[in-house]
Image (cartoon, rainbow, N blue to C red):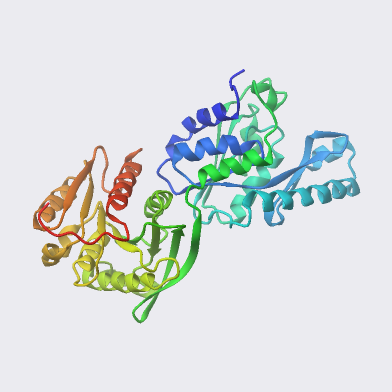
Length: 434
């Protein structure tokens, strides 16, 4: 009996999913039993948690045997082979589906309590259940995630039949299980405690994961002077401040690394604005990507815009810059009267801010990979030019893009701690040598 309960199963499953930590992921638990497993996975991966509501369509005389499943958004998966073997008519299927549709809508409303679904578009969706038997429910869940724009779908369970990859491989990009026994009768036999999960327990898990509910989580149009730029604004309730992201060359508001950092900051109670520094037409001219002064002006325009937005008025503002975007962040922070509370550079090129460096007043954290030798030297030289409070942190084993396991989360945690230390409404930019 490998699992004491769903909590233990979730912790063991999380260990098999460590390779997804540091990616832009969202964990989607299947209610009810999958949610206690999923909350352990979400916490281990430092990823947001939501439910993905699916109802199994059980054979009328043997409800544990699934002949299909339905999900939110009208997704419907029917196993015609099970229906044929069970001599189930279309009318019988329709009757079961009608009852389950009512229950699906009730659960979706109850579990979410009016809050919007987690953002799935462009992310890795990790669909979690307490086990797979026929796979009809899991298939529907994966299809729902795909229909909602997931860039990649991972189906993860503590236990599944040994041949589950043959049956479900087309519905998910990756399948992960702790146990895949050849002799498999039912999911419950693999748990010492398989007590039915209640609605209240599901909502408690979601409340535990949502330490900072959002007041805003919107796709926005940023008015940066005369230019209109696409962005995404996320503001937790009672946000301590808001961080604007200045991405590097060849990147955009969809950068998975910046989005991961934004999620970490959001869970610490900080608002974030990710936006495109250039229009689609401007991106065609590569010289614009390296025009630090122009990018800094865009960042300053976005700063004025966000300070006027509902929910962000009066909040302290910080900048998070990556690669060449870090130079734009420092250039903008040096502008008189901007009152930027803190700056963080990840794998940045602060040297490109040149003559503006001595004018930066905001406390500045420079994060560089230990194997990014050239950029590390440039950061050391740039830090010598700064007259504000500053610190250089080297992440061991990281290269320029922080692609190595554990390195991006290390950088995100450093950024989180720097911003939470400096980004408060009362904080003023600091001056003086470090």
